[in-house]
Structures are given as C-alpha cells and as structure tokens.
Length: 328
Image 1 (spheres, rainbow, N blue to C red):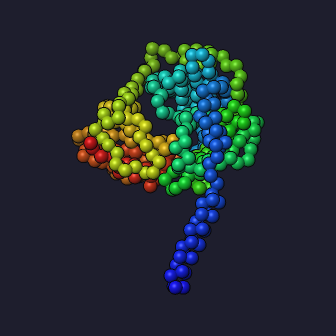
Image 2: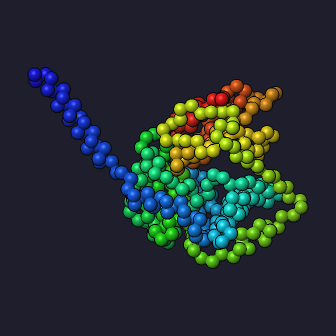
Image 3: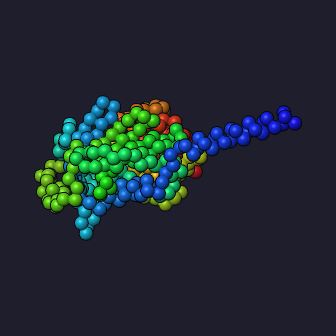
C-alpha cells in the first residue's frame, strides 16, 4: 500500500511546486496593457520635435525628428545627422526619402514601417499570450518623467523589450530590445519638446530641400494582395506569429517585383522576401547573415527561388519561419 502512496504524494508535491513557480512569475495586468495601448496611439495624437540617438553593436547614430498632427493627419520629417545626409518626409502614409549626395528621391507608401518613437502597432489582447507585461519604477529621460514598462517573452522565440514612456502623453522617450539582461539595440531621446507649435513649412520638402530637375525620382510601388494570392504558403509557424499581409513590391536594386509576406506576434515583425534566381547569375549562398542590432537574416533556395527572411527575432525563430515557406 505504501509503495502506491509514495508516487502519488510525489506527484502532488511536484504539481504544487509547479503551481508555486507559475504564481511567482509576474503576470500582465490590465493597467500594464493600458500603458501599451497608450504608447501605440500617442504618436498619432501629439506634436513633438527633438533629437534621438540609435545605438547597437558599438554603432551610434543621431537623428532629428519633427512631427505634427492636424485635421489633415500626420506630417513628419526625420533627418539623419551623422554620415551621409538622409531626410525622410511623411505625409500620412506617403513617404519621400531624399538623398542629397546622390540627388535621388525615393517615394514609397508606408504600410508597416516603424520609426522611433512610433514603434508599436495597435496591440490586441493576443500580445499577452507571448509576453508578460510588467510595470516597473519611473525614471527621467531627456528631462521628462518616464514610466518603465517591461515586455518579458514567455519563450526563447522572441526578444524582450524595455520602454520608458512619458507619463503624461504616452510617447516613447526611450526603447531597448533585450536578450535576457543584455541590450541588443536602443533608441533614446536626448532632447524632445512635446505638444508644442510646429511651423508647417518645416515639414514641406519644397521649402526644406531645393531639389532641382537634376534630381532623379524612383517610385517604389507596393501592391497589397488578398490572402492566398501569392504562390506561396506557410507551414507551421513559431508560436505566436501570424501572417498580417502579403504583397508584391519593387525594391531598390531589384529589376523584378518581389513577393513579400509579413508576419508579426503583435510586437516583433518578420518579413519574407521571395524572388526568382536569375539565370546566369551566381546562386544565393544559403545560411545566416548578421545585421545591426536586433535584425537577423536567413537565406535559403527553393525551386530556383531565393527566400530571404528578415526580422527582429532570434536566429532560431528566423530559421523556423524561413523553412516554413512552401509553394502552393
């Protein structure tokens, strides 16, 4: 009788221990989720202007941003202050990137692109399936009180995030991508003015940049497609990731339109680019390629097509997504 009781007692003890461990893990609260929603909506509600710094892999770059909201929507100018001059103007979803050194202007429609401090799509409750959202202490950033919010991944398929949020407006003052305790990349305002008046002429390319007829304009078009229109499907994906869009795009340096599939777990995004291997050119070299910061790249070849998977996720996740691509 005792021999039968001991395994049962052991099972109960293990079960109780697991319950204690689970309960000791900080869980997402409604208040923490409210902060996340505030971060997502703030850039579409406030004027702001300032200088922010990007840092990753011993590389640092500063940019100046000016953002205005009125009855016609959003207007924005981002100018990179280091290295070669790059200036992006945005009128709602229409973007123009000016490269004065080469006298080129690239135009594109923004559909999922993220620019600090507008880093978050509007989150849904699904984000809690992949991250524990935790409210931490407050810290000052660029002279403002910032509420710290931690997004701790529930598995090893994604990175963690640490946000410093302006307590009044909800604007991101600072953001870091974390691999456990290590910072992979970071954005931070060095100086910012929130909710001030902004002269509309600053956001007008014709007033800011004297582009002449000698400049070349390259229109990068995007054709959004319905579900299943591409000749590709995705097998089992890593937990939490779902397809959010599929499209055809012409990209810089590409002679043909490229198939593009976008996935997200409500926070991290991954893009899959598929293009035919052009005859008489060298075949793509499969494998992993490093990029700066949180971005990882994985290349493979399938049926004379090059599949490039790019995203702000760990290498094991980027490979799982890249290997899930199949022909219909």
